[in-house]
Length: 206
Image (cartoon, rainbow, N blue to C red; front, side, top):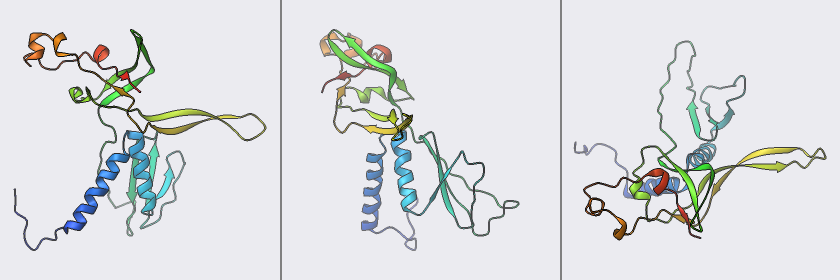
């Protein structure tokens, strides 16, 4: 690694601690892609960015303006317009990242009953290291679509999107006891190869 030049500006320990704490706070808030986008939108708004709607036929943008828009609650795009921006000659610099991460996702019909126990039907999403999900306290987070009755006299019902995050552990994906493993599984020769359909559903344990 290149050693930093003494003339380079380096963050003071207090600044580094502040940045680290802020990053940890963001990661704790961004439990899912939906929560990540909501947290980024909150931070952008606090920083003076104006939210746009991607469904608007035209945007009114101003030089030196800062804007963002969301799509489906899982994607967010923020941008700044330069003071000398010319749509005919100016270019754009883009940086991208993803808001989702590998995890077990609930199926639309997620209730499973096995031998008197209630489990959650899930599907593996992404290239997760699923062995890290076993024998850990887990909760449920995401987005729910809720029917809401309108206050008018027409009896109108609308559908609203709301973030969900249970504040405590409610389930666990248990490992097999060592007595039920094959010799290869016990000694690591076969590796950890769970069947995601049969072995990944978490057991509700409230």
